[in-house]
Each structure stands twice: as C-alpha cells, then as structure tokens.
Image (cartoon, rainbow, N blue to C red; front, side):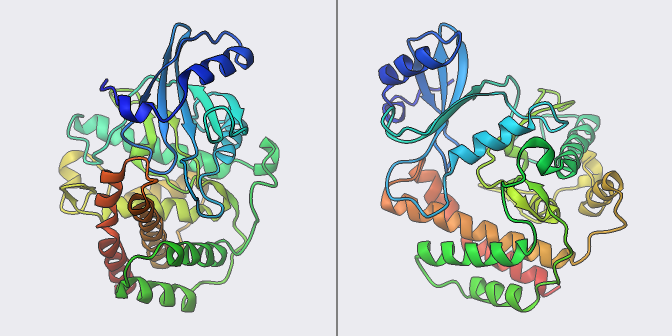
Length: 345
C-alpha cells in the first residue's frame, strides 16, 4: 500500500494511540496512519498497529456546511445494523471530542476484501459479475426491509415528504457552494419542484450513496462483505437509493467516469437497468417503481449538488484530496445535463 505521509500527518498519531489504548479493549500502539486516496467527504485512514489494522474516519478541517460530515451518524447507523442482513463493518469507538486529533472521528474494524471501481468489472468472469450484481441487489433490498424502530433508529430521520425535503436541502447546499451558473441545474431544480409526485408514505433506512465503490466484496465478487460510507444515510424513500445506484447504468465508462453506458452488458453477464430494478421489486414484493423518471432526475440533481460541494471545498483548500475533488467538480455540468435528458425522455 502506498504511504501518504504528508496527508497522514494531518492527525496526531501519538495522541491517537494514547487515547485509543485507554478506551479500546485490546488496542496497542504505536499507530502508523495511511490516508486513503478516496473518502472525499470524510478523510479516511488505515491504522496499522501491533494489535491489528483498523479504519478511522474523521470530519475534515475547516468551515463545514451545516448538517454535513456527521461522522456520529455514520457510526450510529452501522452500529445499529450489526446483526441484520445488511453487511457492515463492526464499529469500535466514536470520539466526539475534537481535542484528540482536531475533529470528531470513529474507529471501525478493517474489513479484508476488494473494492471494485469499474462497474464493468473487467477483472471478473461473466458468472462472477452476475453474482456480484445480485449481491448488491440483495443487500439493498435487505436494507430497505429493516424497520428503523426495531434497530433503535426511529429518530434517525423524518418520515414522509422525503423528496421535497431533500430537494430543498440540496438546493440550499448547492447555492452555498455554487461557483458558476449552470443552466441545466436551474432547469432540473425547477422541474423537480413542479413535477414532484404525491408522497406515498414509503419510508425506511436509506444509505444515500449506494454505489459499487462504497462496498467491500470477496475478491471473486461472491459475497458483499461490507457497505461503507454511510454519511448521507437517513430515514427516507427507498426508491431514492435504487435510482441513485441506477445512474451507473447511464454514466459513460471513460476517463474518470465509471458507468455502464456503451458497455455490452449482456455480453458481460451484467443485468440491464430494467432487470436490476425488476429483481429488486421481486425481492421487496413490489409490482413496479412508480415515477421512475422523477427518481432518476432527482438522483442526478442531488449528485451534482454533492459534487459541487466537493469542488467548493477543494477551491477553499479543505478537500480531503484536492486534485481529485477538482476533477470531480468538472463533471457537475454533465450530471446536470444527464438529469435534463431523463426528464426530456
């Protein structure tokens, strides 16, 4: 693994080691911290110690947008899901005291496995690709089948009017981080407000960023070992997670964009978007997903707003990986345009 020494220096490993030795059973220092090149929102570190490997996620430094980077919520939802059919890492410790390493953080187990960055999965066989996609589908249906109150998360978010509240929240976040006027974003924002379907009462736990690179698999794709990066999780509309993941079928697979558009999915053993949605519906006992185009357009808008925030943090010097954040920010107009293409049919 590459050592990112200059970035690892962002945390005081001596103070961290002393703190965890006093609070985490079996933990022994000293700590060597390697910052992962991913984790744009909350910086993530692999901790190597005499007692084993751990993962630490912390809030970034600097002025933060309201309600963003809530590592305590990440910790709470994964802790609550332990023992369910939803695969999550084991949570070990939450530190809400900023004085230890400068910001709040939590520590979880290190899950051995593979993160697949390209949804076309060139490293796997057809049968392995089919299995891996079914594992993603199974886990998503399992998550949406969890009753929040039964795992102690009844107060994890508000039920009802999810799309309306999220549209309002992400419009405000987008305005707070806007660096240029993007006509397609204006079109999307207006269309979503005018075409929002009536609330159907569906509510449950949603991940908020359900995509293949937020998952750790067995190397052959046969089992999903852990879903990670729960920062955006809440009680919301389950169809938002499904539509968010299905943007992947529409993104191009070129340069930094990793999607399935233009990929011969049948040839590779990867389900079509329609088949993937149908499999989810079968698992959840649903006849169909109503207002699918609205769900997709909302997902493109929300992702564009999120990435715009990442770009703004890069320009302000507080992004976890500034170069990658700026690169991501260049794709905001494309995401907005794809959202407009969805509503245009």
